[in-house]
Amino acid sequence: MWFRARAIFRGVTEASLTREFWEWLKFCGQTLASIHKAFRHKNDTIRQMYIMGNQALPLVILASVFVSMVLALEWGKKLEPFGAKLMLGRLVSISVIREIGPMVTGLMIAGRTGAKIVSEIGNMVLSEQIDALRAFGTDPIERLIVPRVFASFVVMAPLIVIADTMGIIAGWFASVTWLSIDSDFFWLSMRDGLLMKDLMIGIIKPPFFGFVIALISGYFGYTIQGGAEGMGRAVTRAVVLCSISVLIMDFLLTKTILTFY
Image (tube, rainbow, N blue to C red):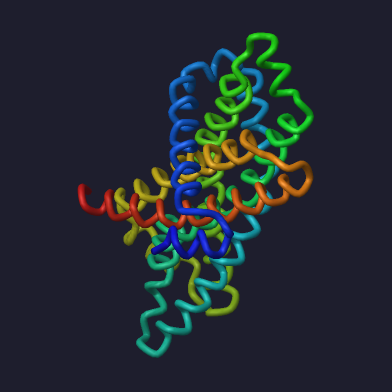
């Protein structure tokens, strides 16, 4: 049903969608087979980590701060009639660490880094730089895709730590400033409410988000066709699919972790 609706909307056949999916899986297999070679191009890998983290950090902090403040205000108003505002520190910290931080970080990376990877790789394809690499006997996937995939996987860990920290601080600020919550009660509530499982869920998910985002974006850049128009189409499709993938993976990873832990 999903394939049929997508086919009607995009004007393509179910067979072409299935073929594209298998081509993406093949691309993923080639990338994973060479992922151990990321350190062979360690300068490129480190540079990609720095660029991805540096460019995404302001967006991640901004989104995490304001979403967390809204969350604190909403929770505070809902808890106030029950005299349970002292639970706010626990609720805000758990929500930020388990869901808000990972989700916001994943979606920001999907939009910012995903579009960047597509445009970079796509420009190389359109300007025939990829063909030049092949002519010199260099594997484009190993040289261009692997460093970006590895960097996207690794850089998510520090990003989520920063996003969670800033989100909790923002939630504390909103609680103390606008809800008249005592600062000490907020931090004590957070300390008593957080469990190792909460930290585990919040830390494990983002690297997988980054990994899949880079694979999807790298594929659409690597297979780009149609010049400038094709570039716009590839960027749009990559960002949409990356965002959807983050949402789906968030559910699957959360369900899996809660099942076994």
